[in-house]
Image 1 (spheres, rainbow, N blue to C red):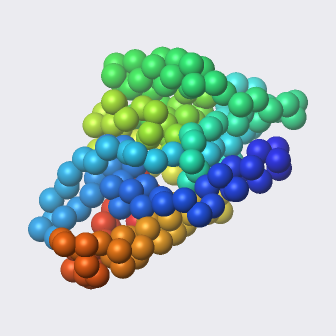
Image 2: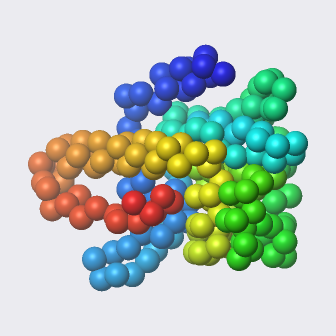
Image 3: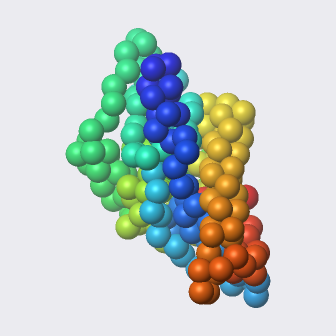
Length: 207
């Protein structure tokens, strides 16, 4: 487990994560100065550890920005598995169908309570994670504008500290790249502050 996180931390370090929260994770709302909201596509990636907390029930144990999207599944018996892209896509596709017909706990009014008390299915946990926002961007409008989903995904973390670490890690990446972009760019390649002076106040983590 530790070696996966150490490796992912190395992958994520030092890269330009500017668009991760500035553009917002897939389908997230970003508010303009006039108070409007626009959906922005996700361009970056996330490393996610999803842990089984009860038989067949999962919570998000850890996640942070990385060069490549990876999901580590940690089972009750202590075994760990790196999900393949095909496996992630299949799980997301199945859960997306439930989102569409309203049977997924992610969009049910009592979804947050269910996630908090018992955990989520593996598909729900993936779609509640940053990786789900990236890989499941095509169903973004069904999720990210849904208040039930926002409440449920927050309840889907193993601990409140895990949620807060996730929020902060993505925010740090966004702020760092915003500052870097401000220093290097301008309409004519000069140094200008006005181009990036306004920060998005909302997004996947509602920051």
